[in-house]
Every structure is written in C-alpha cells, then in structure tokens.
Amino acid sequence: MRALTNPVSYLDGVYAPVADEIEADDLPIVGELPPEIAGVFVQNNPNPRFPPGGAYHWFDGDGMVHGVYLRDGRASYRNRYVRTLGLARDEAAGQPLTRGILEPFDPARSAEADKNTANTDLVWHGGRLMALWWLGGQPYELSVPDLATLGTVDFGGTLDCGVAAHPKVDPVTGELIFFDYDVYAAPHLRYGVLSADGRVTHRADIELPGPRLLHDIAITERYTVFLDLPMTWDTERLRHGKRRVRFDADAPTRFGVLPRHGGADAIRWFEAPACYVYHTVNAYEAVNAAGHAEIVLTACRIDNPVPTVPHAEEPLIPRLYFLRLHPFFYRWRIDLQTGAVTGEPLDDVPTEFPRMDPRRLGRRSRYSYHPRVAPGPTLLFDGVIKYDADAGGSEAHTWGDGCVGGETVFVPRDGGEAEDDGYVMTYVTDRRADTSELVVLDARAVANGPIARVRLPRRVPFGFHAHWAPHASQEGRT
Image (cartoon, rainbow, N blue to C red; front, side, top):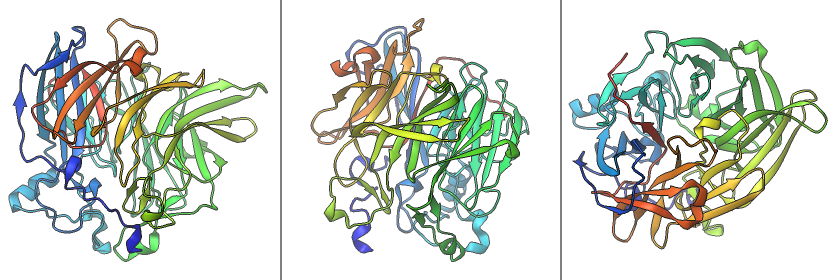
C-alpha cells in the first residue's frame, strides 16, 4: 500500500501556504483591462494557519480567499483568512485542535471529528459572497470587496442543515439549490432550495444506501440531479475511527432526478455504468429523437477513481493520496420515459474544474471552459480548453513552461447577450519565479491568450474553486 501514497507534499512548492494577509492597490497591468469589468475575482484556498499536528491532506487547510478587485481598468489585491469558529478556537489555543482527514478520530465523537474550514468553494447569491466547505456546515459570509468574514449565515433562521460546496444559482428564478451530506449518520443526503430573497423555502431528506463521497449536483429548469456514485466511505473503517473510500466497479452510477420543489418520495433513480464525478458542467431538459423528454448532463467523468497499481507504473496520471485524478469531458442523456441512460465521451484530454456561462445554468448551453490537467504526480493545470459541445470542437491556450493555472471563471461582458460574449479569468503562477498573475482572456478567442495580465504582489497557492462577484455595495446580514 505504501507505493500507492501520494509522492508530493501539499505544504511545499505551488501548494505552500502563505503566512500573512496583505493588500495592494494600483497593481501593474500588462495589456489593458476592459474598463467595463467591475467586480472581484476570488479564489478559495486551503492555507493552514498553524503547522499541522499530523499527516496533512490538501483538503485540511484553513480557508483563505485571494481576491482581485477590478474597476475602471484598475486592479487591487487582498487575501484574507475565512475566520471560522474552528480557526478562532485554534488561534486561542495557539495550535490546531482538530486532526486532518488522514488521521484517526474518536468514532464516539464523530460530530467533533472535522473542522468546517470553509476552504473549498465560493458562491454569490442575493448580494452575499459565501465561503463553503466540501463536507457541508454553515456558510460563512464575506464582505465585498475587502473579504472580511462577517460570520456564519443561517438565512434568517430558516437553515436547519449545512450547505456543501457547489450549490447552484438559477439565473432566472434567483433560487440557490443546495445539498448537504453526512458521512457518519443517516440521512446521508439533505437537500434544500433558498429563495432569491435569502430564505429556505424547501427541504427534503433523501435516504441513500450508505455514506457517499458526494461533491456536486446539477440543475435543470425544473429538476435537480443528484449523483449517487459507487465511490463510498468505508463504513467498517469509519466505525474504527478511520476515513477511507472504496470504489465498487460492479455497482452502478445512479442519477437521482427530483422535481426542484419535490419531496424525497418524488425522486427517480436512473442507472449507468460505474464511474466517479467531482464536478458537473451543466444539465438541461430536451426532447430526444424518439420524442421522449430527456435530461442532458455534462461533467468531467473518471472511469476508476481509486488506484489499482503503484504510481510508478503510471507516473503521468495525477494522484491525491488514495485518489486517481484522470477525468474527461463526458455527456449523458437520461430518457425520462424509458429510464435508459446513454453516455459518450466528448474529448480524450483530461480536464477538471469546468465552468460555463452562469446565465445559461440549467438551460441548454454550448460552451464550457476547462482547466487542462497537466501530466505529473499530482493535480495541476497547465492550460485552459474552451469546448463547443454542439459542434464538437475546442480551442486551447497553454500557460507556458513552468506555469500553473487555477479554475477558470466566465465573466459576462457588460451588455453582452451571446453565450461566449465575455471574459475568462484565472490565477496563473510561474513556478520558477514564484509569482502569480490574474490573467484575463477574451472568451471568444481563448486560443489567442491573455488580453490582460494583472501582476500580483505575492504568489497565490494552487487552490480550489473561484468565483466572480459583480461590483455592489454590501452590508452584513444574518
């Protein structure tokens, strides 16, 4: 088993945490920022406040948000820790009080085993920027543009569960569709809908056969699609205070289709061959050639997410400890009449962290933007690919020798209505110079490379998910 462990430290190199919070105005710009862009590009990163007390997993670090505020062709930078309750306890003690996910825990105190670090995702809804954690828990609201933590959010007392990373904002209704899951106890999946004015208006508890490693959902105009995948938490190890996942290649992938405001008894399950999905791109409703209603779902699919051979036998396929990161752009069609599910790969180049025009979410869409997975021992991105799912084409831009990018976010052009009328933004780090930039590309000409590069006052560690918060005044709410 030793040969299957990850060969890279997540405390060094491009992953290394930064030690302080800084801010800088009037950043140098190469090229020209379109003056109509007004808002803040933010990325959430794991950044341990104290040296870890044991084995460190990339998922363990305290949340730190790095933001670049753009307005009138100028740019400023700041980074801030997400001031979670767990971080406050650690700071009071002067050391981390919670072990990471590679360390054993007391199964009798499982509710206290994990710290909500809010280090994974960001979402903008109803004038709020919120930081989220992959294992759920309460969201943390951040002020814009200074990124100070305003506290936890319970949506006026209407939230009775957590909110996991990757909720979806319906661009038409303004609703936030979210889920939460519990590794240790049933119900393992909880589901909710937050109204445009920030109150939970619908909740349902959905029973699963056991604890799953859930990470994303998809929405259509009328439905929510859940991914019940055969990579599960090992319940026997959990009973002994250890976290490990299992993948059952003989079990089906299940897609649960639920009317958005339906109860758990209204969910329908559709089966497909075993696989794993970290991140979806989009889903939408259509009518197929047989005249049947169907749901079209796109995502980055991994055939088998658990290594079966030592890493030396496939050194160019990234690993994350006991996970194998080899995802490809894929499309399923779910026939709502016959129950049949068909699937097809859309490319043979590995990509992850896919994003699209948020104004098309849940409706038919054509374009998406995927960081390209670099060959090597662990997850890094060496470029971006723009896909045309209708025509089947793509165009790409690589960041250059020694450079690593992050999640790419689509920002609509002010007044633009076409699906790719806008900009693509991400952080790019030069590993040789130990410096980072915010790069801005024209979404209609990705292959041409950046139209502007904002030079940052520090290296931004390779992190998780990014978001765009449009310029708006913001007051703290509860």
